Length: 93
Image 1 (tube, one colour):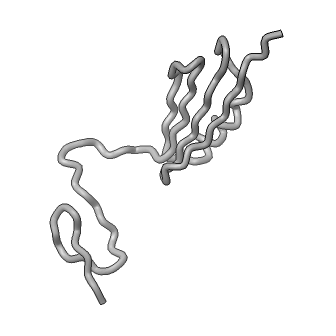
Image 2 (image 1 turned 180 degrees about the vertical axis):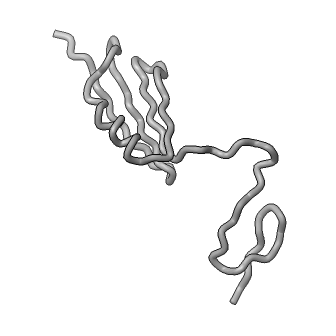
């Protein structure tokens, strides 16, 4: 059975061990999901949460162009790096 080394301390770990890498005094992220709102290419709001349900509820409320003059972009990011995007454009008659 092979062992791997902890990336920071180079200590041998048993297989499937949970690795905790020191942050050198930097604060760890307390969220996994992020929802950003941009109007006409300008960032308006960012919501971050570790609770998927909270972010999905906010995401479901993104249904129109809001206060944008031309278009609104909503981005939901998950911990795996996947991003979901909604774009809404103002219809000019």
